[in-house]
Length: 414
Image (cartoon, rainbow, N blue to C red; front, side, top):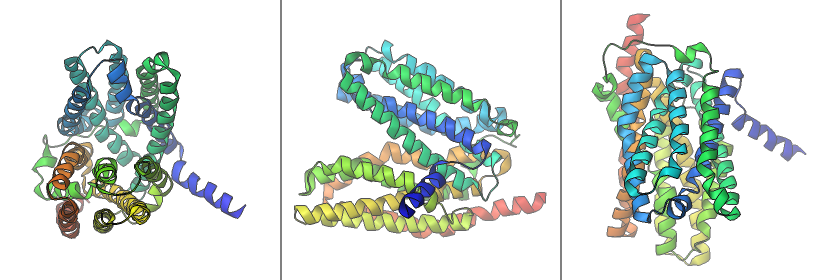
């Protein structure tokens, strides 16, 4: 009974936000995640069987969608500060709901690329206003924890959507064709819930000039250093599975088991891992620790290629746990740094600019890792570890330097 009650209490801390506003935000985020999980987990099957696209055409379309994040994160960060974060988020979710209704009309690679890019633009465009809503609804001491709870809920919702899709794929062609309609309905529900957020979520600021974040050199340095630390995503989803299958003696069935383990750990421990990242200095220290764990994970994966099957499997499982810890801490540090360094009069713009480190990792990370490991094999992991080490060591100094002008602005207005 004691263990069961402890587990339930831990789940409640991780998945149940405190207060009405946080619960409403969590509900819309869960609906959004579930909708994405429904379609994305079955998109490869849907696009190749229903839309008749080749694997190459699907890959190119998704790459174009990812690249749209560079523009969307910057542009909609600026827009959110001027029209209101909650309003803009509702529009972005509504546009995505409409976009998914268009999937049955896709009959070729060009139409798919255009639709995927438009949906990617709207999805990335929702990131800055969502972050700004958190920044304006919650005080500095609670923002990182709220973001951690939202991430746990997102992973849970995405997993639930993926489970439904697995059943739909088994159910035959009719259920498979219903996937974009189910996703659209869930995104529409999320948009409606967004409209119920309190007025402060639509608070309109008047920044002094456009694109001030990308002109803030010290802030941009923090963003650039954050990109290598976020490589855990490409390692966990792309590089590690390929490495297991092609370079180690571990069984291929280990790959989906590891991904499930990663998802469960994120749901259970993201809130716990966010402790200490509430301030800029604290978030920088957490970022440095996340880099150390990422380095350790890379080296463990490299060693696994030299071991026999059973030992390699154990080492890879340990590497996944270490990489997941890096993921949890890096995500927490990113929220702490982004919210801590963003000025109030350009909150969404700074948050959108900070999100570029994630966009860059998503677009370039897989290709860089695959090319590096393909070129030099095991030593590629050492190269990645070295780059991550440099970024982790430089982060506290870069964050402290970026925090100085922000502190001066606060003192001037006090």
